Length: 338
Ligand SMILES: NC(=O)c1ccc[n+]([C@@H]2O[C@H](COP(=O)([O-])OP(=O)(O)OC[C@H]3O[C@@H](n4cnc5c(N)ncnc54)[C@H](OP(=O)(O)O)[C@@H]3O)[C@@H](O)[C@H]2O)c1
Image (cartoon, rainbow, N blue to C red; front, side, top):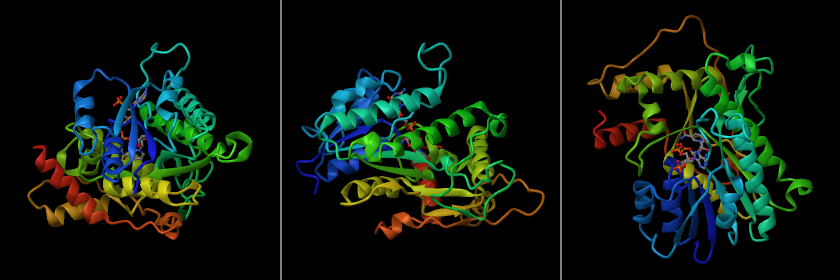
């Protein structure tokens, strides 16, 4: 299907990036992938060893802190998937940017402008996060009744003071997504089509040998405090946890490329479940593990997931919550983590 088409994937050696490249190559696309360090043998080796990589996968070195480095990778491509995001800001590492938000927004702007200048890029698809779509009221005091594409996380410093890492991530993903979408109107983007996919917590299998968010999905049984804190944080911000399988995430990205007419914002998650429901699943199907559970005081508001935009366009999710969690466990067992 992709025979003859050239596409660019930023952040090609990450959890989502590597799975996406594998799928694109299998479909016959020529892929320009970026990573920060072409001397990193394990990352480069993994990508080069993917089936069909030979002659179809071209690697480029590019860092968001030097965003014009992405230009050669984008040049000549029809579609660009902007997957990379800076996750940690080394203090003093950059004279230009004070935190990940400034760097991510500058990177996003530069990549969008490069798409426009290229004369070849038709559509830019941005891997956004549901942390930009919290169903919170503007002052953060309470939840709305539903979560859908109209929700935008309120960005008040005071709401996230307890954890600078999460604050940076929320600000960086929300501000970047708004900037990307602004290139979808003719005034800024000169005809560039823009799709953003705020994805839920991604689980399932992996091509990498390192931990990723699939570890967060099983934090209640692996007794990993940092991962467990991330789960709690997501439930606190979003009411429940939107979950999506790595295979569905990458299929959704490709769907948004191959569908002839599609622009705008599409939440991407196949299920929306509470920590309690996740714990119940593990207790029922995996009684061999001790499941970490905390009894919450008071009633929780029952927020409804009412995003249907992607499915209305014709996308079909293949994995429900049970399949996602089961695949996380299967993968962790294969990797010797359980
Ligand atoms: N996993 C999830 O649950 C989830 C959910 C929603 C949205 N997302 C979004 O999906 C994207 C990929 O996430 P992931 O889970 O695949 O994370 P990941 O495995 O940590 O991958 C992050 C990628 O970003 C790249 N990167 C980091 N700092 C960079 C910089 N300064 N310049 C250029 N590239 C940089 C990394 O490149 P190197 O390999 O070169 O270090 C890596 O390829 C992110 O935009 C994330 O916000 C993820």
